[in-house]
Length: 548
Ligand code: TEU
Ligand code: CA
Image (tube, rainbow, N blue to C red):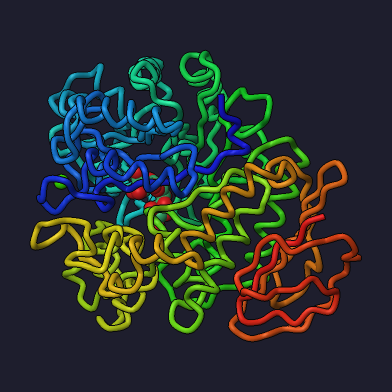
């Protein structure tokens, strides 16, 4: 059985990973075909984003049928083969469970809309206000009101995401039983883990107007959240040893995460939190252009490292996923120091205390999109906000610039396998979303052939976690916390020490290491000739891992 603290998870967004039947969409067989690539990298688990039957309004996060594979992605036989082939290679599959909401095409919601009271109670229907307004002023995360009016009932239903994603009513015990049945179904199929989508939003609190924000404080980490997670755990994955779970925690608090991800194992193995990825937002406002605040990034990352450890809870550590811009474009320098900065960012995250997640293409240093027109975007959120920003008075060019920087499609362009047509992703003329023109230089084939590539750097980082217990289990302590250019920290375990020093900027910096460096050797760097010295001169984005 694997220890998730010594493991690394590779995230696959199947639609953009590899297309085997030439329809322009990645598929399950594509993941099977590329298992050896993932094995070569060294990952222990693959988190697959949803491939269940879905109208794809939100790329599968709108589930119509939890028990079947969307034909666009393949068949149940394809899935069984993928699971078996992964297992042969010692890789476990983690499935993405979307239980805060369903698709409006889901049978339950269709029955609800037909007036069946039993199914209406699976969702959250409410009367509007006397003045004809929706029940509360909450905003959907994808823009606009979080309530949709249904004339036949003279009622509204809640959708924290798209109108086609009605929220489930977890206060109804029958809903919880339905959800548990889905988890057990996939466990029986040999699945080794689960990622639970926005799972800290499932327990709604009181339905009040929010005069300070968009409503999130009334439904985030809600009143029964721990009870519901404990119940889910007991009735499903908790009953079987060795199933790894991660909860996606939207706008959560650390105090709640102590419990979600406690080592007592009553809720989940670990959590994704996002505060460190809002350092280029204005508060919670994503649709603005704000330079990344490095001090804030460090403070948040380090605060979570220390806080979670103190409370015996476990982090998932990551920069990228299918909702985030590419990290080398975001916190690195994709032009001048592409390779150095991509490697530095990999090192900074992988040596932390927590389970690292690598998002497809991150290990190649894939960058944000090169899109120049709104028609190239596919994501419902990006398309909505391009309109909303203009409604707020922004000029089209300014609205577009914001979309370019923050769009989730930055992470969703096809995986760059080689320098050929469509990056080797598909034989179709047009993939479902545009391939980045830089695939001629940034691609897997080139990087597999180059010992000094970003791919091989990630491979080394993954190997190091397995070789050195101090990375998986060591204590964490910040080093020279206030430094304005360097992110440094120390890990220690039973006489073993790891010192990780990263220059986060494209300019050199002189640095005196506050630690005595006797006995240390440099075990990883992104320059060929890094040395162990107390008086260091770190080059642009230089990153060193010292070990004693
Ligand atoms: O994302 C949850 C979520 O709230 C964000 O990551 C969201 O995309 C962002 O805050 C918007 O600015 C999860 C999934 O990862 C995402 O792909 C889904 O769209 C969303 O839930 C709904 O299921
Ligand atoms: Ca396909």
